[in-house]
Image (cartoon, rainbow, N blue to C red; front, side):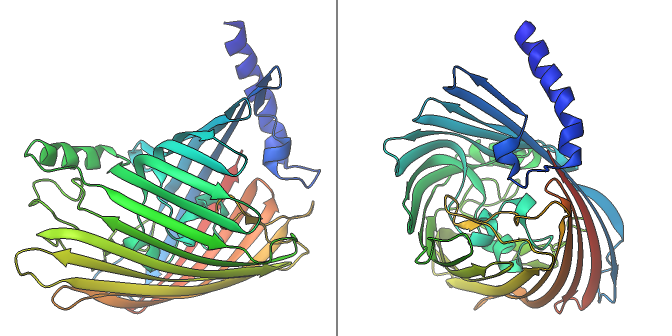
Length: 399
């Protein structure tokens, strides 16, 4: 009982200092008071974030887009360390009335460079997807990433990391469930449909990584998968579906392949190029999704790419995370910072027979980092597929 009261007291005393920001200029992970320790061997650190979005839409063809607001993320989690070899992480998102499991796994480090993870894990595909939601320079990820990149799944994943290389590979099974997905999966499992699996790997080379001032990132990733069972309720066996809804407010699938049946397997391939120099960074990816079908159905292939860049204006520096092969939130000074960002991305979901649509998207954004814990984002989108414009704002609090 005393331990529980101590934790609660620590929580309440921490909130004012978190909201005020970190005056030392160090990252929150180094200075956070949400940190419990025992004998300097067992450590637990808690974290959370809240993001509130608002958006307006105009100029759209065919499909009317309604203005509105939403809580795009309400997440809480923690990391724990038991000695030098065993560690783990848990994170849960409560937004949109769902309970979604994000990273929930344990890690055992056999050496300083190699470890094995087990649990609910983000598949190692796409730099943009592996950029944490809280660290995104633009409010939404690129269209092609949202449409094709795999999310969190139960599985086993090995990770090798040194100064210049990050190698990740794993086998993954059931998708991280929301209530609706679980209903779909249970319905199909009861009919004898197998759960499905995926084999996913990623290799990142960081040839200029001796300095925090500049760096280069070159990556490749691939995934082989059999159809999962959570695509839709009462769907035929071996079915996949790819779709894209750009806004957190309007979940309309304005690009959609519909259900693709009689699928034997899918193959996903991606290449990544990124770099940073002081306040500036760029990032680009190309992704191709191939669908191999049975019983004489035509195989399909879809693809897309994006190019984006951003720059800090008030003295901050971009921050690259070697362990993820992705960017962190920038390092900013005591007075905060402003970041300008631009992106062009293209998604082509028209195959040989399946016609899911083709879209170009132009995005411009501005981020105001009030301090390390509080960020305001403003994004303008123009999307050619439905010829609509959107202006969105997000306020994000990290603690």
